[in-house]
Length: 253
Image (cartoon, rainbow, N blue to C red; front, side, top):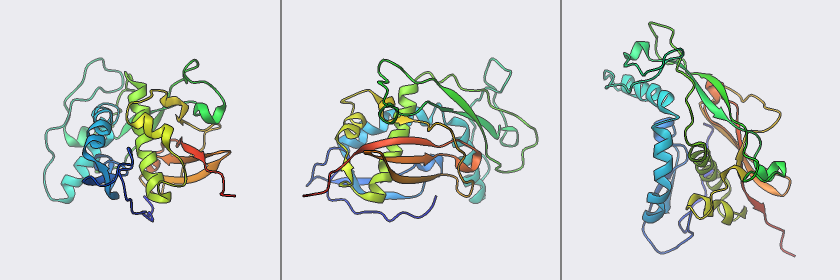
């Protein structure tokens, strides 16, 4: 991922409370190849709240790319692969336990219709359709050509929520906390609202991302909104998401 400017924070990025101990926040989880962090960015109560759905999604929808990246890190340290999680292959009904060389390099990730706030649609009454994009991570030298089955996506809300969390962290790192009104998205992060698809979607028409980076992003205005285009697994061919961070603030008179 391209370098970040990294704005220092004086409060928790979720609850905005000052004067309490804070820890670092990963912009993209380390399990997905993220390295950049925001120092002193999240208080312990918010860390616990925001970590639950994120971890569930990492262990479910991202299990294949997460495992491939873990294998890459272990090889770089000169260690053999640890025990790999079972994975269901395309055409199979039950999970298989595979060796590292046979673990699938091709997997699918969910994409959606545009975010409700950008499309002018009430996503509470009109949930977005879900599509799946085939991705490929060419890591290592596989001995067989295996493809992971398309995941069932049992909890689209949790998956989209994790996308929103990472986009929000990237926006804060790039622009700080004063670039727009973040109240609504922070309420979503802390479980005070559940309309995640008002904020998270896939642009239409879809466009590919540069494959130069594993992940990439851009922060820009989209009408009255500040939005993040998040190209998660860009180098693997995943189509970018677009996440509304908040309404742009009116210039001071």
